[in-house]
Image 1 (cartoon, rainbow, N blue to C red):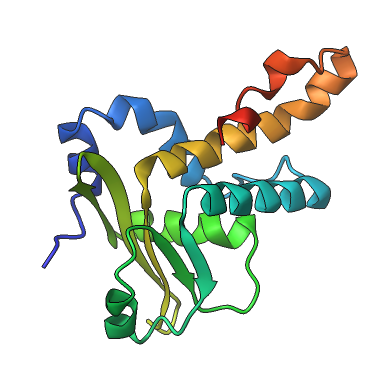
Image 2 (cartoon, rainbow, N blue to C red; image 1 turned 90 degrees about the vertical axis):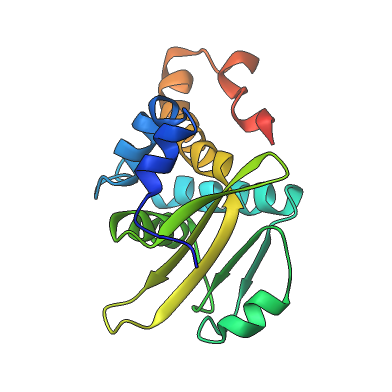
Length: 170
């Protein structure tokens, strides 16, 4: 059985805490997506889903209460959720809630650090089961920064290739 309340300790022991401090500050902030309009949130969602597809992360609606069936899928990466439609706000909320409520841990498989988590709703019903590369959480933040800065680049006339480096990381 994994211990779920040692996420920050695990980050520190893997020497990743300083690398993720800005990411976690953003992720745990209730206003984390307030600078993005609905069009940008749609773009964020689309780019994030493409990222998951490129990384072979199984992303699907699933009955999260059947954990045994989830385990039988035997996938390295997955993001199962209980709602029929999901956007960037919900994806980030699931990750944020699992961290804030201590329902996550880090796992290393073949040298890769994975973020493993569960999220529950107010009725204590399981609504998400997650196992993704830890680097995806950093990608969320980088993508947010990129989309937030797009307006600034366009206003200043600096919408060049250097301003799109994060988007090309996929």
